[in-house]
Image 1 (cartoon, one colour):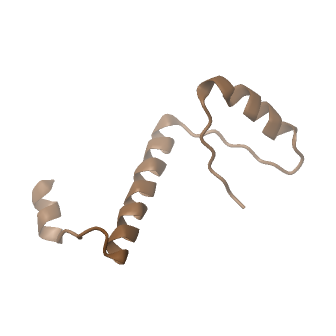
Image 2: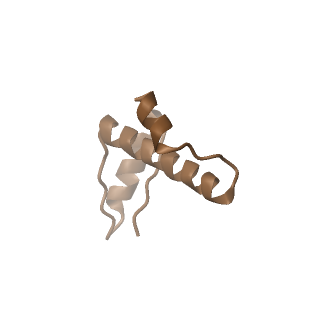
Amino acid sequence: MKLLIEVPDGKAGFVLQLLHALPGIKVRELTSHQAGVLAGLAEAVGEMKKVKTGKLKARNAEELIDEL
């Protein structure tokens, strides 16, 4: 199983030390760019779920292209 955990900067050292001490646990830190990409992807998935459930109206592709 893979997990993404957000930890306040002040607690990061402690959490990393704890995770490294557990057998079988692999820890990989993300760069700020990677974290930003994941956050954007999570937001996009959330919006798609809202569109599918009818809670948000989808835009057509022409509107999106015009915006760019």
